[in-house]
Length: 453
Image (cartoon, rainbow, N blue to C red; front, side, top):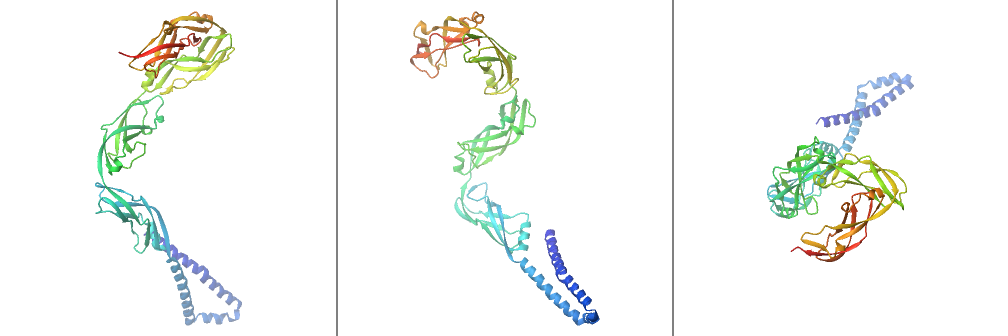
């Protein structure tokens, strides 16, 4: 109301300033000019001007003139105008415990038509009430009107877009779902920490909605956000009011009511770690006649952090070096790549020195063949002695080869995917010393796979 009074005061002040500037002041100047130019008749004019009838006519003329000006201003101010209120929220009145409504728009546009004064007052109104009264309607399809309650003025005309909609009313039903827990923004957690476990007091929730919507719900998740952890440290921390969301099998959010809509989640935070050796693995073949005599690194071990199951299986961190066609001693500065499941390491770079010497070779006999990745329920055997043990040629610096025995070499067959039958399979060879090159002299062997009896 104060804003309205201030606006009206400003309006009439503008009218008065206009009359003063455009009418009173010019007339006064005209009179002064006339009296100055006609000094002789100035006294007569002054006497004429001082007569009561003269002043009466002048006052009447000014009053009529001012009335016309003011009246025209008011007419222009009161001309009909239009104002569009966009995105006005729609509320529905119905039994929310018994029914679910589909098809009702969240917002509508309202066009108000009336005087500028009424429009101004309407826009100053703190809220607009746009509603649909569904009281008494039962399950089914209905066409309903959207109404706008004029809070500020009843003299305005209005149009709602859309003014009517077709809605569907469904009975609301309930089902019990098992809650699953999901962790958001995992990368926000300190790289040396992991969330080992997520716990809730009750993993059962109620979902409510129309039957066809509940049929789409594949899972209900509690979305615990790592960014909401106040203090990142080992131990148990509780996230309050974690929101719940329902999803279909494709991962899309389903709009259903979930009871409760928020829960508290306990996060058990740990920091699994392990010290493992760094294994330097040369890749390629050095220049002809040369072999690696020594591999020296400024770091021999690294402390790794990450998933506990990954760390428990980790035996070493591999670092590959390209030595193909290497002709002389060389120093390498290498980055260490984190294996999958490892979130942090105590060091990320190492310096490796490779030294070369003259190459020689020899054969190591009676290397036992091993079998890897054989499916459960099967046994395997070589078809002859030559299919069970092989000879391996080793190449390197003589002083290194002198320490190599058959126990330092592993020959194996990769039997992943093989089932019952007789096969000829390629032999793979590896050794414990990275300075040596290992080559199986027998490239393929014949085996027989049978089901266990």
